[in-house]
Image (cartoon, rainbow, N blue to C red; front, side, top):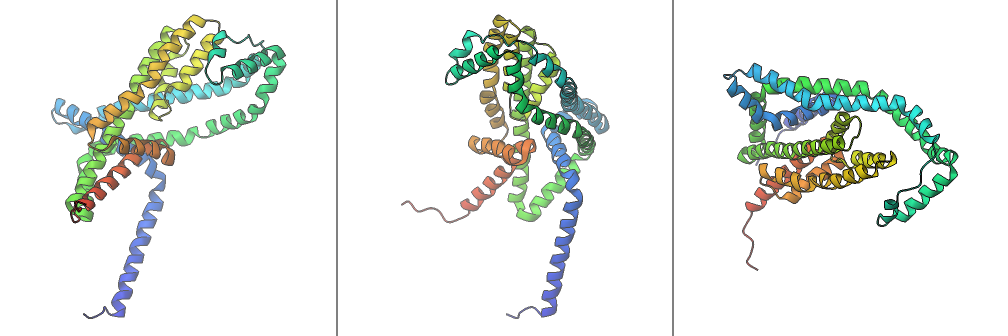
Length: 355
């Protein structure tokens, strides 16, 4: 067998380098849009059945269906997020006055139920009694070490609003484009998968879409149900700003934090304001609401894709830790594709011995 001429080898090497430079330059150019593109693709893949349903009801008019779905995405995601951000900005502006008002008051004695909390109830009671006995000066001394961190957080919060608004606008624009040209994008993705791995590549692309839709269904629906139930409990127990707190709970649910921070703060505030009865009612209501995601989310995720539940949960948690909130959807897709390819590769090998 003859070896390739040296000139041909040089041409191939230069061609590979040129293609690599073009790919690297393209990726570098698209880096500012990658986050918004992934978010938009996730939203579109998860809500595509709703788009086709609206399109059928409007006589096959894609433009009307695209406009309706884009508005729904704005109201479902952007409005709650904007309410939450507005609340945080308002809290940031009122934080110094609230802190001064809080530290100027006498801390009441701890309720009896605090000492009955397992593991750390006695320590909390002892510290509470120490602060109550020391008067306002003790509260000031206890809060002072955290004031610098709070100030830094408030500055970072107000400084990141502009970037977040631009990111949201990009997501909305890309969502509208993908809704209107979804079939073309899907055909391109399937053709790319077929070019790389033939039928197996196409199956991997389809499985990735199913994984995104299942995780979105499990995460978003669970967060929605939790936020509604939590909002009902907050409203019944007389907690102010219920709508904004419900929006915050929804965002925390999507971020896999859950309603625990908001519900715990509401319970503490209810006890602190002297309504121990309503505080107890809210505490009892909060326990099943907080634990709901451990039951509802796995059921919803498992309905959409036939993958091991442990694999999906590992992808959700690991993706969240590695990539942030976006990793909720990226993590399961990566593990699903790897699992499918590895399973097909193993199945093509020689049969295992009976030993």
